Amino acid sequence: MTKKKSAAVTIACAAAVAALHTAPLPAAARAAGPAAPQWQGCPVDEFCVWEGPDGTGKVATYRNGTFNVANQGLVNGGRSAWNRTNGKWCWLDIPGRTFMGKYVGPNQQLSNTAVWAAHRPDYVRCIP
Image: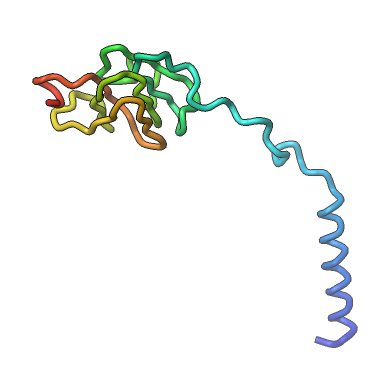
């Protein structure tokens, strides 16, 4: 490449970069507004499942549990949960009964994981 072509390419690149820095962003690329509150809407003494990770989106609350969170409006399952009870709860990443438990201890949270079923342990399902 000749010096003249090299200089022309450098000037063209500099002009393009300058134009990018001064042009407004299109509406779809603008910075997002404040994030929605996380882990909201879960009463004390209940187990809560959210449709999104980190306690975001719609929430379903339980006193005894469910074998399928879709029945309470979380049609795509849950992505996070919070046990706000004083006892451990069983949870499952597919709909159904939990026979071999995955446990969530008191006041523990599950974040960014599939939650389809959650219930208190008993001697038939998810033996304590």
